[in-house]
Structures are given as C-alpha cells and as structure tokens.
Image (cartoon, rainbow, N blue to C red):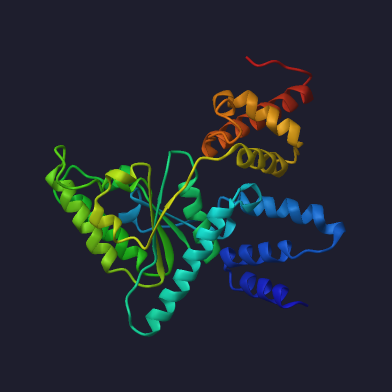
Length: 315
C-alpha cells in the first residue's frame, strides 16, 4: 500500500470529504498505467466539476462573501499564459517570504492588483493562485456589501476581513473600483471616501499568511493611496489569436470533442470575426470564448438527444 493510498484511507475514516477528494485527485494525476488512463481522466473531470467546493459561511456573511475550496480548480480546461505563470510563481515566492517574516514577528501581507479589460480572466487567475497556494478562495460579493445605511458598508467590510484572518486564504476583492475610486473627485460621496479609508485600514491589519487580490478594469481611477497598499500591480491583457486558439482546443478536448488547429481557427473566425479582423495578434476575450464554446456544446448535446429520440425537433 502506497503512502498516497494510506492518506486517502485516513481521510475517509476521519470523515474529511474535502481532503479525501483532494487526495483522490493526487492519486489520479499520478496514474501511469495505460489501462486506467480513461478511468483516471473521467474521474478527474468529475472532481473538477464537483459542486461540493463551496464552504458554508456564518449567517452574517452570507450574501456578502462566498468561500470556495480551491482544490478542484478546472486545470484541464484553463489556459495559463507564460506571463501569468511567472506572476503566479512570483506571488507564491512572496508568500513564502511573508511566512519567514512572520517567524521574525515582522508584519507583511502579500497583495496583488490585477487590472485590464473586462473578460480577460482576472478573477479566474485569482482563483488559480488560491489553487496553487493550496488555500480556500474567498470572493467578496459587492451586491450585498454596499449598503445605503450610514456606516453599514464599513461594518460589512470589517466582518469579511475578520473572517478572512481566521485561516490562510486568498481574499479576492473583485471590481474593487466599486468602493475604491479616487477620493476628492467631483462625484465623490463622503460615505464612499470613508469606505476607502476603512478598506486601507483593514488591509494594514491582515496577517502574513493571507493573500489579498483586487481586480479592476478602471485602474487609472483607483485611489492612489489604496493602490500603494498592494505589493504587485499586473495588467492582464486580452488573448492573442494564438492564445485564443489554444483555449478553444483545450476546452473542446476537455469535452471529449478534440479539435484540430485548422478547425479551431475556423471556429474563431466564425464566432469572433471582429477580433479576427484586427490582425494576426487579435484581441480575444477569454470569457466570451468560453461562453461561445459552452453554447456550442449545449447545441451539440441537444442535437444528440434529438437524434436519440428519433429526430424530434425543438418546439
């Protein structure tokens, strides 16, 4: 019996389903036998699509924060470009440095601001960093965070940060510009200026074993003092033609509908003629590609069902 199998049995006997699933994923990825390859691939896909990834939160955080087990990140259909891989490694190195500083009782919290056009994959990259760090992924829900009641938004922020401090995690403040626009503008509201100050104060009180990631498509309008609180700032650019083609092939291969290079190029031309017309490099939106590819899968699966049922047409 291998050490991996012993660990799996231990987690099952302890009733720790999350760690058992994570250990199963390790075993399946380490499979080297050809006869089990198809089974391992199928089970890995099931684990990646598992809906058991969400973590139950206290009642006073539901609606303003979501917590997710990052162990089951869909790597087999995710495209990590070279610049992003370097960024992830750098963030993890900073995290290790922060842990060493913690032993010296020196406060330092790793933080990263991701900026760029909408749909370029900033939020997914934040989730991937949590996956690589092996920690839960916390995501701030601004629809519930911002309140019209005086001081309530700061209270909501304080509850979020108090929860995040309890254990190592990645805290993603998506669309941070919603609450962190530059103070002193003509349209500035006094309450939101106080929220920016509250956010900066909360960040200064964070432990070393937490990673804060902000995302925005309005980087040039953020409060400068807040931006200085972040260790790193990184622009996430739209996909090039080559990037988009790789993502299309990876996505359809995951769905067991492998696509040749020529077919992937044709698919891009058909679905994104404007981007294709912008030159060899192109400017492709990651989210739009995934949405279009998913819709193609839905149509293909519906067609399969219709054929199974004798060619019944849609209503």
